[in-house]
Length: 485
Image (cartoon, rainbow, N blue to C red):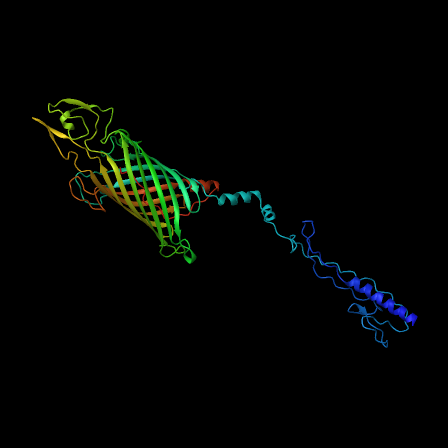
């Protein structure tokens, strides 16, 4: 019994050794400190086949020999009348199968860092990507060449007396800069600097082909997106509000030589975009309506045009009823610097409505309706010299309210986003003509055809240098404010 017990103990020790050699080690609970990615195992470790003559393992224990009595539970039975069996050597794991050459991938349990991905890009790609996402702060800067001519010059319209036919060029530089440029709030400053040249021989300029500066305008604007649609119609309906401030400086000869200092104007503006066929359509995407009201006041040396270098001798009684010294019935002659007996437009209330519709892709149609209410100074007092003295006049200056109307319609098309071409028709005229007749809102002797060629300087810079991008248009080109030739 003692020898048999020794054999049973030897069998139990051998099975325990074989089982411990075949059990794979437990995986680590945390990634190693080395950040270098590791190769995943191609296949799990499989136990090696048993050596010839070795007992077959079942559930980690050798099988009992035939004819041997059953072993107690948990104890393996040894073969009867047999020498002790040496345990099989520990099974060696099969070498992992090398995958085909491929980029090293991190372990599944390792976190992928964005910094690692950024370092994989080249420096040139990084700079280009940053530049493309940058919007130029001076976008919207343009240089416009305007060509305008009266309709009668082209044989369109009726005949008027006198029939003034005029054709000329107008050049305007409009720099713009965004001081604050947020998705909903924007603050921009701008200017308008230009000159004009008349190519006909009318009485608008003293000499033919004379070049004259226009009044220079400095402006600032604050705009904010008040409401924008969401959901399926995100961005299809928007409401924007703006407040504008402008200062006009008398750099033109007509303003500089008449005693003007500057004109200050301020007013709100609201823009509404309404969906038609939607942004994905090729045309008639949206209709954009822009309503603006502006109040302007003129600061000048006098209510009437004056020039200090004039000093023309005039009879004093001819100055009666104007801003002048008390007249004398004797017909004295005095030096006077007045250029006209009528008052400046001291205050103006301008109301305009612009409507823009994209016709097909980049081709758009825009129209403008405007009403300019001009208020002149109301002189107090005045008289007419008579043989017996000065007879007072209750209303010496005449009409103080002069309305003007404006109508403009044009089509615009951008050429490679570099140059905008605008062909249009404009009629800005007095509501009541010099003959006392009410003029047509759509046509008058002042009607003109025009062609605007506007170079987008910011887009030209972007395409030449690769920096910046053109901002999305909120509507298309509307008729710019123009100085009539």
